[in-house]
Length: 70
Length: 275
Image (cartoon, rainbow over all chains, first blue to last red):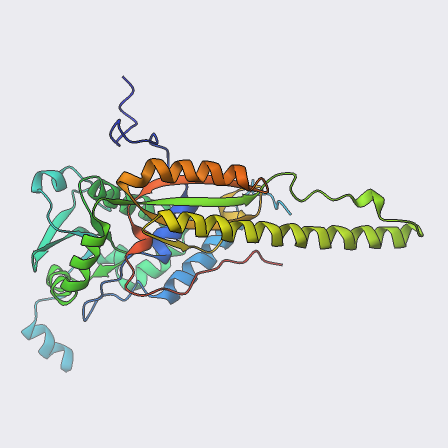
């Protein structure tokens, strides 16, 4: 049986598929609860998210095979 | 000097912090022992206020405030961190409701994690209740291929230059019209999905340079759906696709409920296509 790549149970209506990084970043960067204690490292602030997304776009733009689709 | 007093009172600065993955009602130690965290070592539980925070030990030379700012700028590091964090959250979500933490929520030590569990207990419990028996699904809508074709050959007479300009104007107008039509269709799809879902929200459309998609995205929706309503939801996505041929719809999920745990609406993050 082909269960090794399917961590979700077989009754799951959609089979396991690898998650696209961009879909993941939509969720883990822009959402998710920010529980801040009195002294967290404050890394979950929006500024940082902006920084990282800007860097991300820059890095992706620098990938060699990336073509500008228009 | 001040710092000497502090050091004398408190313990020495910890070499490791706690990277928060998410909060659940409970977590079996055996379950956690089988879930690798940020650096491959098993995650662990910080229990307080009747809740369990699942954390990874996060060495501060990599996950401290300064290094993490640098590291988040590194696409390879970001991807590894996002996938490692997601793997933990997903493993937890498969066993029951979990409130996922945003990426890179690092506390200086376990006591602070425990403290925030206590401080946010009521919201966390309410959120866990709201998520029970539900999952997040993503529906992305792209401009369907061919939807923006233009009858540019029939734009009348004139010199070569004039004809070009007319054609160009017609193309632009047409593209704008198509985008408007697609935008209205995306609104309609989102409303229809929201009626069946417990909650829905729209993320900013993805930049094509990030997604690699060839088509323009007009809908990037997330929906919290009752497990019992899931067959109807997927069916609705299919029928909406048929009803709006100008859109190509794509379903992703199930996701841990990342998009439905924020205490307040965050401003949409938009990465505009440059130029």
